[in-house]
Amino acid sequence: MEIKRIIFSPFEVNTYIIYDKSNDCVIIDPACNNKQEQKYLLKFLEDNRLKPVKLLNTHCHLDHVFGNKFVSDTFDLETEAHKEEEFNISNVTNAARLYGIQTDAPPPIKVFIKEGDDIKFGHSELKILQVPGHTAGSLVFVSKEDNFVVVGDVLFKGSIGRTDLPGGDYDTLISNIKTKLFNLPDDMIIYPGHGGETSIGFEKRYNPFVGSEKYT
Image 1: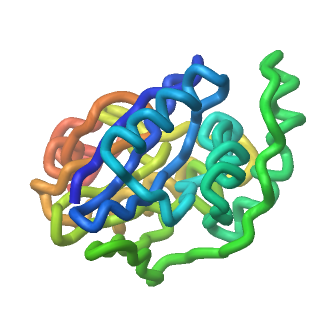
Image 2 (image 1 turned 180 degrees about the vertical axis):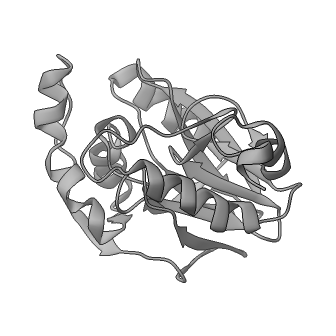
C-alpha cells in the first residue's frame, strides 16, 4: 500500500489517502474546508488515477470531518465510523460556530464500524482497533502487511490526544494506548491526526505521558 498525507484547514489536520496497485483508495478524515483544498484533493486523486471507495473517520470532531460532505457527495460514499461518534458528528455545526468557522454540515454516519472489523479495498486490508479516551468511539486503522497504523488524535509524537471534550477520559486513553497500541510491533509507523509520523517503539520510550517508566 501507499499512503499520502495531506494537511488541511487551520487546524492542520492530516488527511490520509491509502491506495494500492488496484488504484482503489480509502480517504481517512477528509479535512478539506474550502474550494482550494477540495481542488487539491481532487487533483491528487486525478493525477494518480485513484478511485475512492471508502470514506473513513477515526473520530468525528469537527476538524476531522470538514470534508466529509464534499467527499461523500463527489464520490457517492457513505460515512463509516464508530456508532459512539454520532454525537460528535451531529454537533459539528454547533462546534464550528464556537470557533467562528463556517462549514458544511457533514452527513450522518451510515456505516457503523468497530473493533475487529476489516476494511477491504483493492488488494488491501486494514484492521480496526477501538482506542477510546480522546473520544468514546476513536478508531485506529492497522496495516499489518505494510506495518503502519493511522491513529487519529489518540497519540501524537511526544504527546496524546486531549481528553476534556465530551466522550474523553484521561485514564481511559492512557490505559488503551498501553494495552492496545503498545501491543503493536515497535517498528510500526504511527500516522497521527496532527503532526509528523512516529513509531510505536519511539513512543514507548520517549512519550512523556505513556513512555519510559510510565509504560513499564
